[in-house]
Structures are given as structure tokens and as C-alpha cells.
Length: 371
Image (cartoon, rainbow, N blue to C red; front, side, top):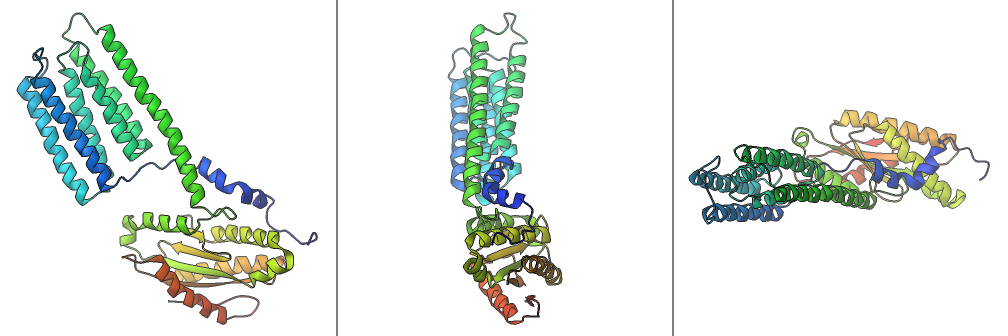
């Protein structure tokens, strides 16, 4: 065993130990969270609450006097805010996933709070606190991208609102207002930093849970989650994916003859060769011990046949060079992207796989099952 040839690069062994950890650290954080209907409903109810508080605040304030807007104009603005959010609420219930609506609602909040700050009747404007709710409510619900946008938008809105508010005041901004503003900025910036660390830890944990620690490929859970993400992608409405099921032949012989360490090395190299044989947009998962699933997002059966033969050629050549008595069999089929279930698809493709095992073509090459 010590004299066995090793044609794989030295980095393969090291990567097998640390690939999952490195992927979790170096890959960027998800740019967008997709909240449920219930989460978004809670957010809209919070918007209604603050709009009603705004109406009470301005209409019951004994100190109110018109600055830039009359009381009736502020009332119209806040009622319009409620109506716009009602339309957004209905749209969110009918279509929960809509980044454009997330952003539109965010900026509606910022503009409304800015109008309230500019017309706040008190020397130290309590309405500044609403920016914190805007930043935290949008950032913690939709991810770091929206957190950063809400933070920058609120800082700009707050600066603009305070600027036009004090243009007509000869005494300038009071010390209490300065400290309230500083405290608010520190709170949201600190929350942004903490949220980034929480997101990094969460992403790292999720990445580990969806990755096969030996090969660095997706495991079953990761594959199913990736498919769920693909299914909401518009391109799947135009193209049918090809599902490919690959199984190593005689792999048990490697473990029985040379030990599991050699078997692990072979699986790691096979995973690398699979990645080299397909496109970066395709998905690869280690489905079982020596079983691999590949999903080709935009390929027809003819193209899949070429890819399958390329995979077979690469892997058979490596096994031959290592004098290991193994090969690989592949079955694949084009499937509909509408309401398809991975388990059912794999059951069908699995039959093609074992047909291909029966079609041995000499020198360890296997025929490819065509749908």
C-alpha cells in the first residue's frame, strides 16, 4: 500500500480535511433573506402601529405649530403611508418573495420618518427613534444587504430631516438633540456589526450542515435546499433540468483490499474530477457512500450524454492509472421542472443507472442510460 501511485495533487488530502470550514468562511454571506408571510405580516402590523402613533403624536401635541407642513398635510402623509402599506401587505400575501417590494417599502418608511422628523414639534424630536425601528426591522428581516441600505438611507434621511428642520431656527440644534442622534447612530451601527457576526456564524453552521465533510460536495440536505432555490429561479420555467445519477463500480473492493483511507482518497479525487467535468452552474452532491447526483440546469439529453462520457473517461483513466479495479456507471434523464420530486426522479434515473451497469462496453466503460 505504501508503494501505491498517487496521481492526485498533494492539496487534495489537505482539502479533504478543511474544505467545509474554508467554504463557510470564505464564501460571501447570503445577500437576501426570504421571510415568510407571517414574518412580513408582523412587519406590516408594526408599520400600522407606528403610523397610528404618529397620527396621535402630532394631533394631540399641544406644542405643535406648522414648520414645513401643516397639520392636515402631515395627516394626509401618514394616512397615505397606511394606504400604501396596505397595498404592499396584500401584494406580500399574494407574492411573498419580491425584493423590489422589500426595497420600495423600506424607502417609504424612510421618507415618512424623515417628514415626521422635519416637522416634529419638540426641541428634541422623539420621532428620530423611528429610524432605529426602520433599520432593525428591515435589516434583521431581509439580511445584511438590506440592513446596510436601511442604515445608509436612515442616516441620509435623518441628516436631511434635521437639516431642513433647523434651517428656520436661529438657536441651532440643542445639545440634547445632538446626543440623541449620536446614541441612535451608535445603536444601529453596533447592531449592524453584531448582526454581521451572527450572520457569519449562522451561515457557517448551515454550510457545514449541507456539505459532505469528505468531498466538500453537497450532501442530501444541501442538494434539496439548492433545488428549492433553483425552483424559484425564472430560468427553470424555460429549461428542463437533466438529473444524472452516478455510481462507482466495484468500489467495495477498494475498501476491502486497500482500506478505507484509500477509499476516502478515491472518493475525494472522484469528486474533484466530477467538478472538472461539468460547468460551474451545475450542482453535484454525494448522495450515498459511492453514489453521486448531478443536476444540469440547462442541458439537453445529447449534451448530457457528452458530459456523462467525459466523466466516465476522466474517472476510468484515473482508476486505471491507480490500478484500482473500479469504474463508474451513469444514468440520466431530462425532467420537467414543474412540481417534480427529487426522490421520484432518482428512482426513475436509478433504473437507467442499473441498465447502464449491464451494458459494459469493455475496459471498464459503461453505457449511459438515455431517457
